[in-house]
Length: 347
Ligand code: 6MZ
Image (cartoon, rainbow, N blue to C red; front, side):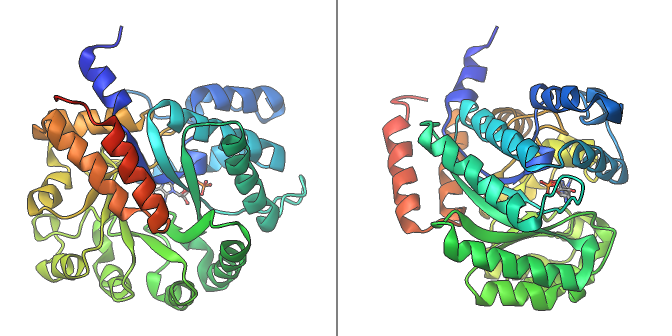
């Protein structure tokens, strides 16, 4: 049975800004995909990390490879994206920025272009079906694919930004942080910024990225994913923190992802506290709700119980996330009105 507290977090209107499409696939949807492809011999427990379990970050990246094997056609992507959007809506998310790395698969005829088109189709279909959520899309660059692919991805993202009725709003840089170097991707990221794409970059997800982070912060990005090792207490530096603060760059913070992926030793040691205490814009996100077996309500609840936030504090936190979205001002105003309309009389 759901307690009153659970209900508060479910009903809390929320903004989700850091969600990788293939990491967000639920058990139910994975089972549907598996049943279509029994020959792959993939079982559901190979695609998710359950309660209390931990993996190395490297093992997490192996999980994505399994999911990519399963989700490899337009039909799969349409189903997965539609289900993910509906699940976020059912969890009380009112605005979602979904991100995904376009892939091509010769055997199914999937191309990078049709990949993006299919995600857009899912977003449009959910709107037509009256699902209570606004969704935007960030095209992702997987850092391991290097300079040329990054440049191609930016070109595609730019094309879609101009042709998707405002649904494609930005670019994400993600992928295994121990592979590749941001300096090789800098020209592509600069080009993206110059053509008006918003940038959300995974920065300092592991401790060895100081130099890369320093370089990429000069762009500067519009938001930072994780930023786990930015601050001096964990081997970062005051100058990195100062750069982030000077440009007021919001952080996307994913508690369970970092704990299960073992880049953070426990919830209570999560860097949410550091940035929250500074009053720096910090947005609670899920990262990969399917792989890490979580949802956004649960992430807010965990942040609150770990760091002693009141319901009113939590409300403010979810409301402040609106200012960090990549969609233009009219969407910001609509969301702000929604929060006013939904605000409880008492907390
Ligand atoms: C970095 C991550 C990630 O793009 O196929 N991804 N990149 N750090 C993380 N922390 C755990 N979680 C997910 O979704 C899966 C892809 O998202 C990125 C990886 O590139 C992964 O392959 P899409 O929809």
